[in-house]
Image (cartoon, rainbow, N blue to C red; front, side, top):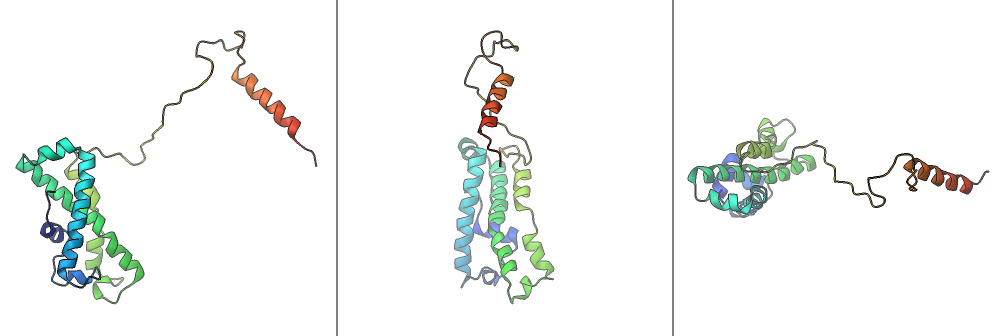
Amino acid sequence: MFTSVDLIEQAGGIDEPQAYVLFRYADKPTLDAMVLQYAGFAASWLKTRAGASVYASAALDSDVSNLFALGETYVACHFIFPILQSRKVTGSYYPLQEEDSARFEELIGVQWMKLAEDLLEPYLTVEEEGKPFALPVFRVGPGVTRTLDGSDGIPTEEAILEANLDIVRTLAVPF
């Protein structure tokens, strides 16, 4: 893991003395423990996308390890801030979480995952949204070398469909 609790809290703006109250924790060490856990999730997320070898070699290059530290920070924030978004939905009496609080929108409105992907683009394999994907289709049956008119003794797809329709038509029960 390249990032730290302090770096995540600074980047996310939850390094204020009473920030643990936002997450309904009793004290700062509990918040720090949660942030450390999410830092581990972020490191795992990046390691699975970058590959173990890229991730291990990043430790050898200080420039790349700095990029991965920031990337882990952004991914950790991406995973942490939905907690605050759910608090916004359930409601709260804290001024920071009121409907019109600009500071709250600053905390939850950042596209953390996009920042991480942009930062580490050369090292990650990220699937594009909306990109079509189709599995290969394998047909079990006659080979591809056949005539289209059925003269080879193998019925055409049209003939097979027509035969199936004939069967279905005989099954129809009039009212």
